[in-house]
Structures are given as structure tokens and as C-alpha cells.
Image 1 (cartoon, helix red, strand yellow):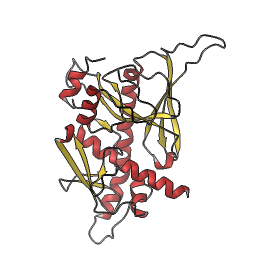
Image 2 (cartoon, rainbow, N blue to C red; image 1 turned 135 degrees about the horizontal axis):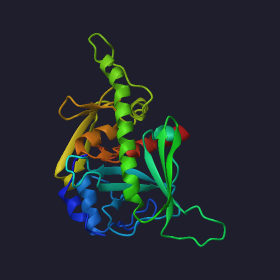
Image 3 (cartoon, rainbow, N blue to C red; image 1 turned 45 degrees about the vertical axis):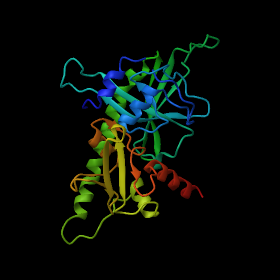
Image 4 (tube, rainbow, N blue to C red; image 1 turned 90 degrees about the vertical axis):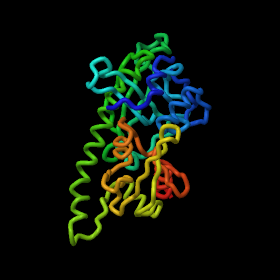
Length: 284
């Protein structure tokens, strides 16, 4: 992926992120706040790479897992930086959300290491598992045993590859349907089965509504509009994406979750918040 911000490069020499409480509003450090603003990440995000404080070695009390928000691993354009992790960030989830509403979400869980009964627990070692919401269930992608405080560097390439594969698959799946809906004489066709189309169907969002994503501490402002088929059209009027993740990834040049990035211009609510409303409606 492309190098994203000069701020990231300057912060890579700094030490790993202090662990915010699970889903609580622990104020981040000044350098962490700067990086979050630069990348358009939410205030409660945890920056794992570049490290700005102690790396979390366990899932905090009251949390289920860390949702991966953004990953940037350098490509092979520059041999000196190829494969290096430039950014890895996430946010703690209070509970396990329904997989069918979170398709494509990637989570990681640092857990106590597997060990012999009676052995002393080493707080500096963790078993870390990774799961992906796919086709209505949380699928285990792997479990790394006995990792030290640099586990985030170990997992970042797998996280980046998984997010890239999901985005590519979602875009490929939607392309035929979207193009078919635009043929002369065809009626507008909504791509059923996506959370965005479900948000439209339940009137939590309206087609034509503008979404905004502010990056670079507000210096860069991206906009998109919801189309009737449940896709996102960017401000250029030509680029169309099936998922918030695909749109955010294309604009930022890094693997991005997307749902916490895009806000409805009219009231500032994120697509993540609106998706939570959909969950509440469904559970009534």
C-alpha cells in the first residue's frame, strides 16, 4: 500500500499505545491523538503500530475483541521499506456483535497463552486469535501461540491481506449486479443482502444522502453519496464502491474498515452508529 502520512513516519521511532479501557473514553496521548486525527480514525481507537506505549497483551475486562480499523503495510516499491508495518489500529468492542450485520469486520483477541496446569502465567506472552465476520458467522482465521509484545507486527500483514481479499471479493460480487441495473431500459436494482441496502430498506438512511470523511486533521474532506442500489458514489461522480471499506481504502491508500470513517453529513452520525441502530431494530 502507499505511504500514508508524514506523521506516521515521524512517530515510528516513538515507543506502544497505552491501552484505553474497553470501549471507554480514556484520553489518548498527544502523539496518539495527532495520528488518529491525521488518519481520520475515531477518538477511542488504539494505535498498535507505530507503538506509543505498552502493547495490550490481554482482552480488557468487559471487552470481547479489538475491531481492526486500519492497516498499512508497505509494498515492494522501495526495497528498503518493503513489508514494513506503517500503521495498525483498532478499537475495543464491548460484546460479540452479530456476524450477519458485520460482514467483513476483522477482529483480534490477545489471550492468556496455552500452558501446562499450574505453570506461572507470563503476562508478557499472549496467544492471539483473529476472526472474520463472513456469511453470518465469525470465522476463525488463525491463532498465533506464545507471541511477545511485538505481536501486532506479526499479525499486521495477515490483517492487511484479509481486508484486501474481502474488499476485492465484495467489489467483484457487486459489479455484475450494479452494471445490470444501469443498462438502458432496466429498472433501478438494489443489491440485496448488504448492510447498506438493509439501512436503506429500513429508512435509517435515504438514497442520495451525502456522507463525509475528514482526514489529515480535517485538511482533507472526502464525500460520497448513497445510491439506490446500496452502493457509494464518490465525489468524482464515477467511482462507485459496494462497501464503506472499499471506498475508504481507495481514498486513503491503506486497508481501512470504513464504517467508523464515514459520517452522515446531515447529523454527523457514523455508518457504524447507524448499523447499531439496525441491530436494535432487529432485536426488538
